[in-house]
Length: 309
Image 1 (tube, helix red, strand yellow):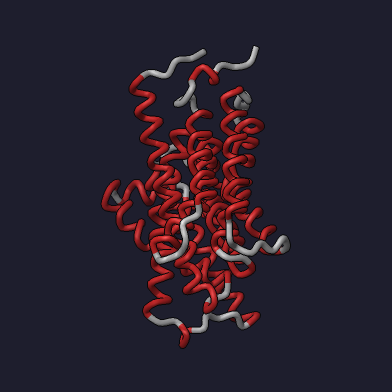
Image 2 (cartoon, rainbow, N blue to C red):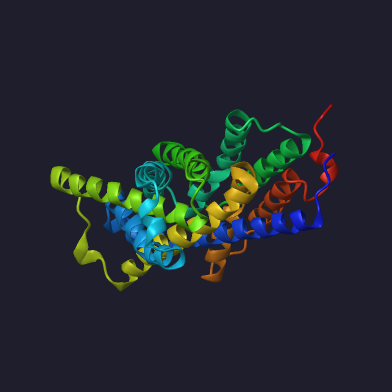
């Protein structure tokens, strides 16, 4: 058994709080996305969302670390990772939101911890300890409880498949953002992937408009819709992604992705603030999910962190 020092425990707890905050901010973007999704094709919305996020973070990165750091960064690799992590994943989540409501899309994210754990076990040779198994089990149970308490209508078709594709690509790309860009700070990693993705998405959106005529419905887009885009792009993309990559770098994609299963509760909480009903099933599910994530890291019942003999 490996004991966790007080400093390491505080660091892990801080990383988990950052991850939790990332999920809350991301969840806030799902209802906001409903304002803009009907008026923009998925590719165009992906381009607008990532471009807006990149335009916010790029000046911050330059101011914080200098133009030299920015120009020396590996932009080709950053663009590729960003295209997979944020471009394709964002495209699929937008597609999923066209077929399902925000709560349902958040529920499908319950598959992400399993994807994250499998990535760490196979790619990083992480041992599958008892604590990890218990944490994963609690995360899945919490997700299932949230599913049972959800009021969204689930269409087990293209919408769910698109949401599953989104979380799989996002899990792989989040890990790759940390692994493939080790010399950059979390701010640099997020900014370069966002900017690279935005460049690719803008080209794709232009082609989609010229070839297929899929342009945004500009007359229907007013202040409310632009506000929804701002929350969906700056909050749910730029701010949330920065906190997410910080957390992934500290606790790994497996433990970080467990927090994703509490997203249905955060979405329900946003709806409750706006006048919707309180859902105790999703509340219980969120508590179980967060407990599972802490157990998997040895922060609760650390004796379970020992490898089975």
